[in-house]
Every structure is written in structure tokens, then in C-alpha cells.
Image 1 (cartoon, rainbow, N blue to C red):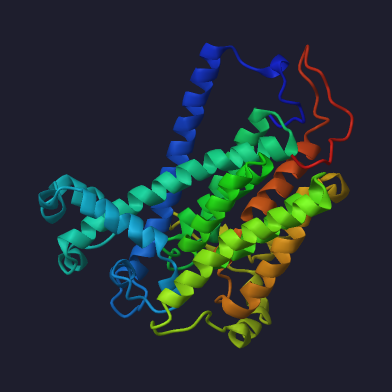
Image 2: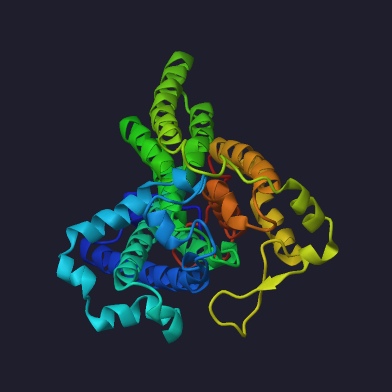
Length: 391
């Protein structure tokens, strides 16, 4: 299915077949999103409704979480606003089936009785938004694969499905945080509009990304990689970077000021604990589950996974588009530093800033591996190296 074929009229489907194809792909993305989110919620609910955790679901929605979690205001606002727009009777006394399919599917009956019905409804709303962000993100990953690597849509489709299948391996023991899927959406949307050179939209998306999570200021590394790879005049590049810098700085500073009275700090320092963890050989042989507890998979920090990962990311490195190489080196370096200093042990979800660059690098590698596969009758075999120009 992988192949380095251009997106020309020769490979376009007739309109009716294209509609059917998109419908099947939408169903596949929908089913995949459902499975991913189910895996997340099974782990997250234990953290979200733990009263001993200061950034639990209730404190997050009431904006009482400590810093740095207090800075992440967009997703709580979405959940609260959605709840406010619904009829009050529905929120206070929702259909029993809604509650059964919501939080009750992930917690025992005794635990459920301790949680107010309104908060259970907001859990359902949060899950709805998470699903919407994740489903949209899969389409965006498909788009950036085609636009950046200039590959056939079938290659991008399969690469996106593989990304979704591997995503649950990044979920920590407690799942993650309420804003994780919206973070994936904003980073990918930002890259998509950059590649499309829709710079007004990219500046707006960057501002939204920072309201969602302040560390998305680092998305400017993708802008730098994009400017390095394109052919704009140097003056225009500096002007564009300055405009995006302003769009990022204003919400960043405003949120910092608004949450200055909260307890906590900008980061949580874990360097010494991480040194102790990574210096043990056992840390490189861990396994984990996603949904089925009987099925174990190597953690992303498992040596088996790491060897495969490094090979796939670096395969035919010099043939990868400049944008992909620059993005991967810059975001990979900064994420590696942040992971060592401010993240707990193998909290791989904190590498999410680099996920798009990793996805593009691995997709390019898979296309290169299968580029010289035996062709079907009548199929044109591509033998030349792909263009390295970023889209």
C-alpha cells in the first residue's frame, strides 16, 4: 500500500468512489479514535477523580488546580461552557443510559455514588471533546503526510492508522491529562496551516494552542523549520517569525499574570529522580497494557521498542525533506531535555510536541522501504529518490 506516487489526476478516484472511500476511512478513524480514547479513560479516571490529587477533574474545571496545571485553561472552559449551554434539567438529571455509558463504565458502583451527577455529565462532555479533537487530529496527520512528503493518499492513510494504533503506548499509568488530545490537535493543525502557507490562520492557531497549554510556545520550532525549508526572502521570514512570536507571547503573558496567585510553580523538577530511574537496567525492559490486561506490549522505553524506533526514524535520513529533519532535530532535542528535567520517569506523553515530526520521519521511512516493492500489472514503478523540498 505504501508508495511514493504523486497526487495527480492519474491517481484520483471517480467522485462516487472517492465519497465511498472517504466514508470508509472516516469509519476507520472513528473506530480507532474510540479505541484510543477508551484506553485513555480507563487509566485517566483513577487520577481524575482522586481527591488527593490537586489537579483532579473537579479542581481543574473550577480553575483551582495549582500551577503549572492552572495555566491550561482552554479545555476546562470548553467543558464548562458546553455544560452551561445545555438545558439545566438535562445537566442535573440526565438520562440514566448516558451516565451508564459515561463514567459508570470506568468506575465501580461505590465510587460512582461519591461523584455528583453534574460532574459525571461534565465527564461525558469532556470525553466528547476529547473524541472530537482526536478524530480531527487523525485527519490532520493524514493531511500533513500528503502535503509534506508528497505521497499517495493510501500511504498517508495507512501511516495515520499506524500512528493511532501506537498512540496508547504513550499513555502514562494515570492515563494523562484532560488537555492531551487538544494538544495533539493544535500542534498538528499548526503544522498543516504552515505547510499550506496560511499564515494568518497559523498565528491564530498558535495563540489557541498556548491557551490550551502554555508550553506550546515551543511550536515556534516548527515555524523556524518551515522558514528554513522554504524560499522566502530573509526579511519576510524574520517578519513572519516576529508576527507569530507576538501571537504567542500575548496569551502566554496574560495567562501567567492571571494565574500568578495560584499555588505551585512553572514546572516540576524531577531530574534527580529521573537519573536514578534511567540508570537502572530494568527501566529498559518494561511492559505495559493498553486495553486488554492480558496482552502486554513493550513500553516505548523498552530496548526492543527503542531499537526499532531509532531505525525507523533515521532510515535514509538525507532523503527526508529539510522541514522534517529540522523539525525532528529541534523538537526532539528540546523534548529530550524537558523529559529529563521536568517529567516523571517514562512519561512519554510529554514528547507530544515532537509527535508530528516523528510521524513524518517514520512515514517517510516506510515509504522508502516499500518504494521498490514488486509492482502490479500496469502499475508504474517509481525508482527515483523523492524530492526533499518541504511543502
